[in-house]
Image (cartoon, rainbow, N blue to C red; front, side, top):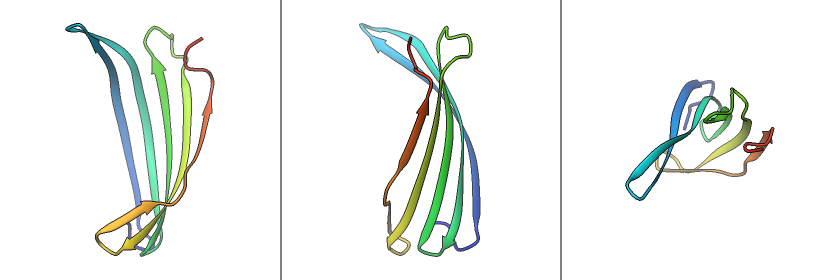
Length: 94
């Protein structure tokens, strides 16, 4: 959990690989950023954006947005996202 007034910013990259019968193949790239803001010592808001780009898509892909409020249940031990809103745009395949 973030303390009141704290801000967190992280970037991410992941390569998706599928494997079957001993063979593996690159499937997708995921590039994103996440920001968190401490509203109080027990409540945070996390915002996330990711771009999912399938292999051989020529840069076309899916935009993924999420808002996840997070609340502390047992301070310094247990917290949870109380709900999540997700918005996806553009079809991933075809």
